Length: 499
Image (cartoon, rainbow, N blue to C red; front, side, top):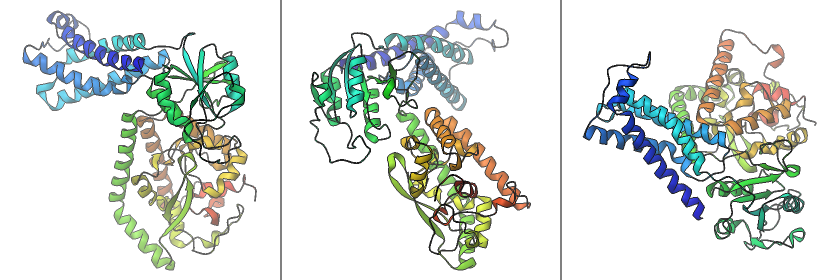
C-alpha cells in the first residue's frame, strides 16, 4: 500500500533529521551559555562537543531514538492525543537510554545540557511531526466492510458516509449462533443484503484487498469479537494503517471509543507492538526462571511433605481456559486426598484437605507449579485468571460478556486478584479483567506483581504467626471439582453458581 510505505519513509526520515538537528543545535556554545544561566537546571559549566565527539554523539543518539520510536513507524490509526502521548513516552525512553549509555561509557555520552535540551526539543517537535504526517479518515475515504453479521454489515452500508468498495466475508469459521461451522474457502460468501456490493474474498485475501483497492477504512461487522479472526482482522488493519470502525448499534463497547451522537465508533483496542510483546515475554520468562531457581529447595521439601503425608501424587492437574477459548492443563501441588472428585458446585469436602495441603493453601505455595506454565508460554505472570473449563458455562450465565476475557493470555495474577474480586462477582471480575486488557503495559504489570507479592507475603506471615485474616469460616473450604483455585475462590463460588 503506497500510503503505508509513504508514512514509514516519512516517519523514519523525519525522526532522523529532527534528532540530528536537535543534537547539533543543543550542542552550540551559545545554547550552552544560555542554559547555564537557568536557575536549578543550569550548570555545571558549559560542555560543548567537537569533531569526532559530535559525530559519535549523533550516531549514538540516532540508534537509541530509532529503536525507541520503532513502533511509531508502522502506520496505525491513532487519535491526536494518543499520538502525542505515545511519541513523548518513546522520546523519554530514548533519553533514559542515552543517559544510561553515558553513565556506563564516557565515550558515547551526551553532556548533561545537550541531553536535557535534546529531550525537550524532541518532546515538542516529534509529536507535532507525527501528527502532521498521519492521515485521518476523510469523507472521500475508500472503505470496505469486513464481517460475518449480515444485519450489522447492512447497517454500516446505510450509515457510512465514506465510499464503500466491497466487502470481505466471511472472516470467521463460526456461525452467527456461536457454533462452529464447516471450513469456508478464501473466495468468501455472498451476502444477500449487500447484493449491490462486490464480494472481494475471504479473510485470507484481506491484505491483498487493502493494497489493491487502496483502502484506508475498514467497517467491522462481526457477530463475535472474542474470536481470533476478529483480532487477526484488527491487526491487519493496524499493520496497514487502516482505520477500523463499527456501527454503534452493533458495537462491543468494551472495544470501542463510545462517543455520544456518533453513528460509527472507532475500535479502541490496539494490539501490542513487538517491543511491548517482547518485553512482556522477557519479564514472564525471567520471573518464572528466577522464582523456580530460588524456590527449588522449597519445591523439594513440598514434594517430600506431600509424599510423606499420604503417599499420593505430588501434583494436581486441571483443564483451564486459555486465550480464545483454547484449553491447557494447569498444575498445582496437591492439597487434597486423590479420591474421586465431586464436581457439583456446592460440594464441601474439607475433610479431604491433607495436613500438608492446609499449609500449602494458607501460604499460597500450592500455586508454585504454575510457574512452569508461565515458562512454557501457556500463561503469563499478569492477565485474567485462568478459569476451570467446567465453570465457564456457569460464569457466562452470570456475565454475558464473560468471553471477552479470552482476548489475551491468562495470568497467574491480575487486576481483579489484587482488588480481592473473585468469581463470586462475575460482572465485577470481568470489569477488572477488561480494564487490564485496555491498560496492559510492562509498568502496569510490574505494579500488579508488586501488590500481589506483598499480599502473598502478608498472608504467609499471618499464617506463620497464627493469625487468619479471613476468620474461621475460610478454613480450607474448597470444592473437589476445582482444587486448583484459592480458598477464597472456592468458598465464594458456591454463593453464585447454581448446582
